[in-house]
Image (tube, rainbow, N blue to C red; front, side, top):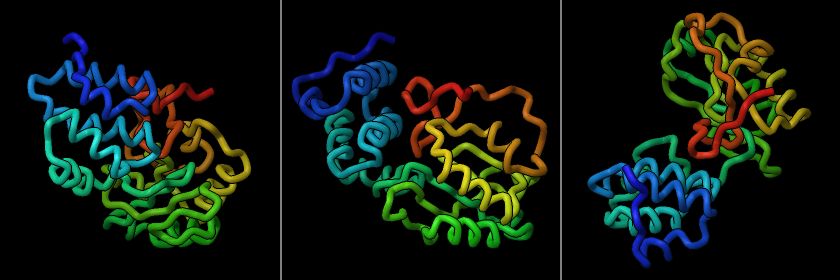
Length: 218
């Protein structure tokens, strides 16, 4: 598919976005016969561009897709991974669904809240950590599961959770990768990973190289 040619109104809607994001918008719109089908990836681009899904970002996506602002907002508010408030550098998510809960996820979450000084569902004043509890991440055999910027660590104990927070706070890594964190802070995994993951997350959004939210882990 060829990149889409944007109208003047569409270009105005993303005039303050980076050139790389503008090019990504063209490529995404060129992949969908109906522009409204691109609403989810465009929201993701807006989140990377602005740090979270802002009101202005949703307006821009509405212009790009031909949807109403209410329709775009309904998508952004339905999926929890579209964050509509500013996040810290590290989004620390603790699964508290049944398998993780039975194996001590509440203790892990409490340890992270205590070590970061950030309550569940909030962002610290210094902008380093956002802490949240989440529903099942599909790795029940490796419970309890913790994610940092959506990079997964399995078999985390409360003690290891504290060590993870200290590592993030003191080292301030620009890239966080699941393999490195698993080796340092993880325990039993749900299964052996068949493919090495060479890239990690550079933002509190899922790591995806074509969108610029991933980078190789040294």
